[in-house]
Every structure is written in C-alpha cells, then in structure tokens.
Image (cartoon, rainbow, N blue to C red; front, side, top):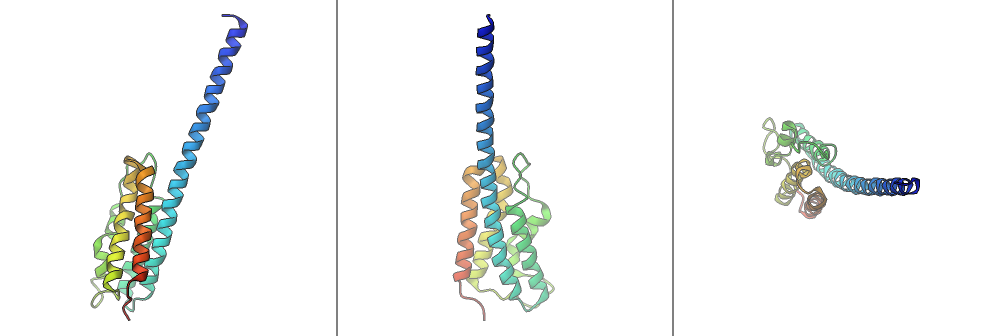
Length: 164
C-alpha cells in the first residue's frame, strides 16, 4: 500500500466514523424528544389529578389522589429509562392501580368524583404504568400512543360532569 492509499483509507474511515457519530446523535435526539413528550404528558395528567385531589373534602382521599398524581408524573418521566429493565416500582404500581378511584379506606365514602372522572382517572393511570415497559419493546411507537391516551383521558375527565 502506498502512502496515498493509506491516507485515503484513513480519510474514509474517519468519514465513516463521523457519519456514525452523527447518526447516533440524531437517534439520541429522537429518544430525548420521545422522553420529553412522555414527561410532558405525565405532568399534564398529574396536574389534572392534583386538581381532583384539591376538590376533596376528606384528607385521606386527597392524599390518595396526590400520591396518584406523583406516581403518574414519575412513571411517565424518570421511570422511563432507555436500557433499563422496564419494571415499574411496586409502590408506584400500587398508587397507579384502579383502587385510586375508591380513595382511602380511612375516609368515609368515596372520593368526590363523577363517574366520568373515575373512568378518566383509571384511563390515565394505566398508560402511565405501562410507560416504563416501553423501553423493552418499541418506545418510538409506544410512548407517543400512551402519551396521547393520557392526554385524551384528561380531556375526557375535564369534560365529565363534576360532582357538586
């Protein structure tokens, strides 16, 4: 191999390395955008759940809904870890369970929620709980769908007739 050939091969390798680095940066930006979108959806949904919590006259029900709001925000945000195990923490899973609509066992009766709000609450907790698991499958397909489902649930909940 001549000096010119060696330089040409080195230049080609350097170009390939630069192109690979550029592809990796683009992929990372795409992943970051997906994660940001999921996090934003979680924050919007958590905000609505906190509004529901603020309406509660009983502290026990308020606390259950506030924990659910925190769990939604966390599950849709920092729990979605690319390269992670995709598992939702047991405590978060509990706080996102359908039992959130029945509130605290220490309070009297049920939380002050309309049937539509209860349905919407369950409909947003389920996709939030599923978000960490997307890292094991196809986050580019699943995260936007789950975020859109959460947004639709919040919209439906806001449109539901509120309990006086």
